[in-house]
Length: 154
View 1 (cartoon, rainbow, N blue to C red):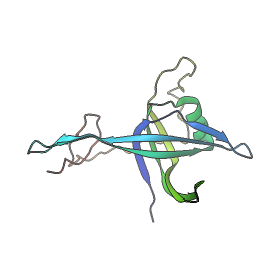
View 2 (cartoon, one colour):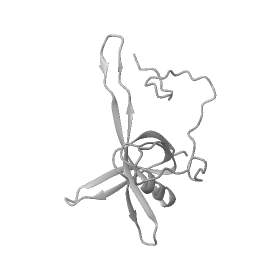
View 3 (tube, rainbow, N blue to C red):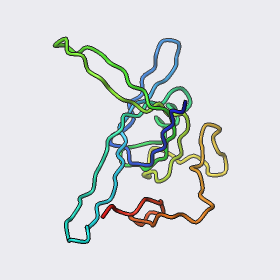
View 4 (cartoon, helix red, strand yellow):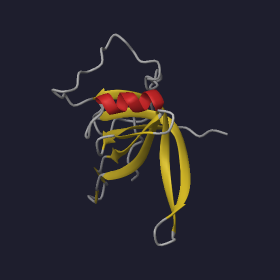
């Protein structure tokens, strides 16, 4: 069985980091991914569609996120989907779906006077480069950012 997620998006808020018993850090934030809108042949406008993902990072990745990531930064994450349930104050059972990140790469990070960027020549072992496509893709580039997406449905 396979449970794997790859996302490229922008942080919706600054990472929130907690230290658990034993000193283990956990980081949580939201990540927005947006599919660009398009125009159908009949002239109908299909608007952008933004999905929000709940991101969870542990240990070393949580420390990197705490130190270098800010609201609006563009990142690549790879991980697993996990869904959990809880009971709210009104005794209603709620569900939440989260992405537990195994690998992360900072793509576009906002410059901050208080935070220095990590040296580019020292890759972190838990980072992972997004897969590079060597074959000519059957998809065209819809939004101009170099990512292959299927053509809009007509």
